[in-house]
Image (cartoon, rainbow, N blue to C red; front, side, top):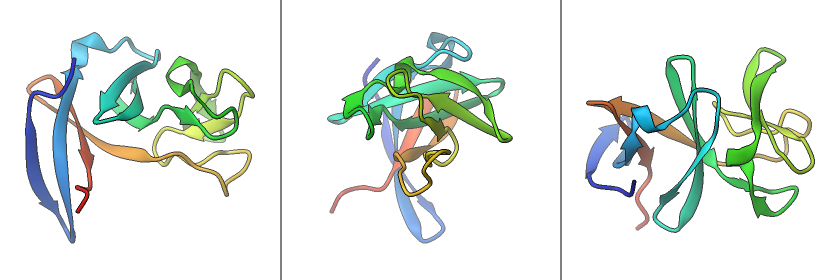
Amino acid sequence: MNAVLTESENNGSVSLVWETICNIDELVPNIGARALLGDTQIALFKVDDNVYAIDAYDPFSEAAVLSRGIVGDLKSEIVVASPIYKQHFSLKTGICIEDPSVNVKAYAVRVVDNMVQLGYEPKD
């Protein structure tokens, strides 16, 4: 489901734009889903009562495959394992567990009236 609502919210010193992506019921627990935020491919995950969003692009394999990865817990961190080379990315921060110098973008997520919304900084 593509965006149907965009609104701005000032979150401290950073103004976020919130874009509706899908209904939370469309997300299967512990299974990734891919969505578009503009032209950017996003990987969405519903784990327990939380929804996480990171870029779908895996910098190691140079392919948008992270939505197809396996969700798990590694070193007390909720992660997704890339299906290609198996690096683990934190769903909270986007940081690679095996190589913290590498990361993917993690997005602010909220659920409003059962609709999953992603927050991002607007481009000037």
